[in-house]
Length: 262
Image (cartoon, rainbow, N blue to C red):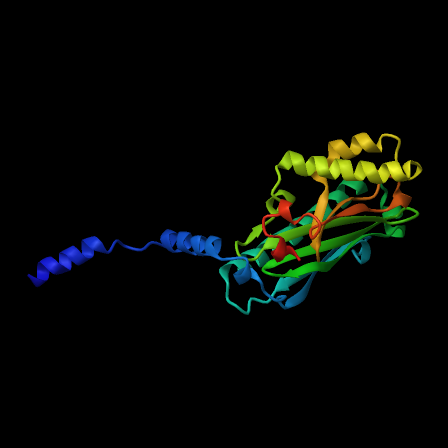
C-alpha cells in the first residue's frame, strides 16, 4: 500500500546530520587531485589592533603600547575553511597582544615610575605574505621590541595554513618525512652553515641546533621551504635571524604534493 511504501522509504533514507555533511566535505577535499588544488592567490585585507598602558598622576603619560598588523583572507568562494583560518589568525593576534602586555607587566615590576615615564617601551608587529596560492598561505610576522635598551630586539614568527582544510600546518605536514627526519635535516643544515663561518656563531651553536631543531620556525616561499632561528639562538644579536631554504624543486620525491608548493 501507499502507507507501507512511505514507511519503507523512511527506513531506507536515514536522517542526514551536520556531522555527515562535514565528513562528506572532508572526503571531497581528500579526493581532489593536485590539479584541482591549483589556484591563484586570494585577495587579502590588512587589519590592525593597538593597545596601550598609561601612567602618571593624570594617566596621560604613555608607558607602553603595541600595534599588530595582520591579514584577513577575502572569502570570495564562501568556503567555511577560509573563515576558520581567518579566525585562527585573529586568535593568534589576540594571544600575541596578551603576551606583550604580560611581558611588559613582568618587566615593569622592578622599574620605577620615573624611569618608566622617561623610557620607550613598545611592540610593533608587521607582516608579509610569502606564499599565497594553491589554497596554501604562509604569513611571516616581524616583531620589533623596544625595551629601553641601546637597540631593539627583532623576532620572527610564521604560520602556514591549508585553506582546503582550515588547519595550521607543521613542516612535517608538508614533507613526506617523519618528525625526527625533519629535525635531523634542520640541525644538519644549520651545522653546515655554522661550519662555514664558525666565528659568527656561539661556540656551542652546533649542539644548540640539535636541541632547538623542533622549535625552528618555517614558512613557504616559491619553490622553497624556509627554516629559521631567531637572533641570539645560534649567534649573538648582531648575527640576526639565521635561516636556510630547502629547495622543493630539487627534491620533489620527498614532498607529498610538490606542484602545489611551487
